[in-house]
Length: 383
Image (tube, rainbow, N blue to C red; front, side, top):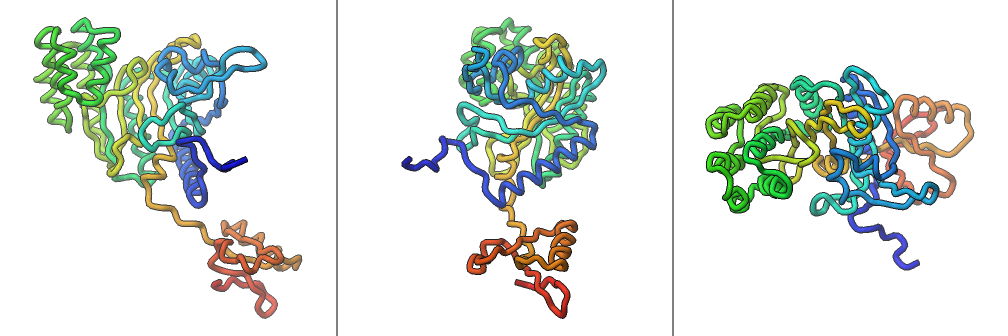
């Protein structure tokens, strides 16, 4: 077959040493999550479509590959996000009454890339907290994301906070719903001032002014106070600003800021939302927030908050990884040689045995030292 090695667009292999670097990062993050009490789950790659696209996950519809199950005759979906699966596990399988903390790591598949040059096959790692509606849970999620960024070597990242509840409070007061609400949400995300002005032209003057102010309201603690003065004194607006002020006071070594137009997940998120950015990348490398009620379709409407990262995207934000060098050992059945190789591997060394006839390709083994026998003992010397 001609060009049988070609892959679909925006799908790619991960080669050494990048694959090793991503795997090491996956292990570090899961170990970090476990230290915070998050239990690992491994949902299936494919489910009935109804389960993947229920309730708050409806906005994933366009991202999800659909196939017909030859066994059941029902539509199946290849997961585009693991978060709804975690909500199903919490609501229907674990059925705990208190707080449940779950984490996961696995590949997802998108029908199209989420942004230019992004992969259609992200490797998603995330942590979700179910069963607590208070700001304390949002704070824990934000703290864990901060720790995850540091563990990934991205301590220079910055996190932008927003609040979908504030937007919902304004739309409810203005009587905005349906398609207009979605269009306004999208315009705010892109900070499209002319479009925001056009969409709010027929609204009450004070509420229209509030929507137009949102793209200008970003920054630190001083911005929160400016927002209190500029926005209507609605209970939902006040509560949202109080939440953001409480989170902004966190001191975890990563820059935090608030952007009231940095919204995401309309129809999915309903409270605090956050996204992490690094220099040189226009799109978020991690994102999350509150999405209460995601498990309602599975029989239990639970408060929920969490975040996810794409390991592929993070790997692109880090310095180029270096290949792991090792020790080249000769092929042989000598008991001392075999014992020495076993000891080195047990100590964490990478030991590559040079098979017969491969001396000419020694450079491809990725070794900087070799194992040789000197005075009856096996020793490591530079290669």
